[in-house]
Length: 173
Image (cartoon, rainbow, N blue to C red):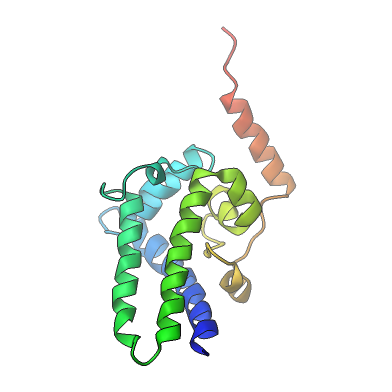
């Protein structure tokens, strides 16, 4: 049963490390497999007020959503050999991967839900510093590593929201 809390901590640390060093580190290179995160997902979120339309489509299209799901399947495959010795740990890591996907998808289809339930992830995409707030499911490792930077609820967030809203108002002819 110790595998459950250990799995939660390892999954959250892995989420932080993977997001920071793989998705943003390697992903900055347009030729990298991981470039989908920075060059597709972040661009869509900034352009569409945190919405990424790729999440409305099928997982069988080769886009950012499908690559994210494939990466999570890879995580499940890599941890599967540990089932005989650490079944609770593996189950918790798999649960965490599924939770990550479901929350991440919902956050990018419903920005209001994201603001209420995953404000740290909204801050990651919409705040001025997209190289902070690496966690999606829980902000634990952002707090531990000092990378949790609040944006929602600040004066800057209110000003930015007003600017985004003004851009949506049609100009008079």
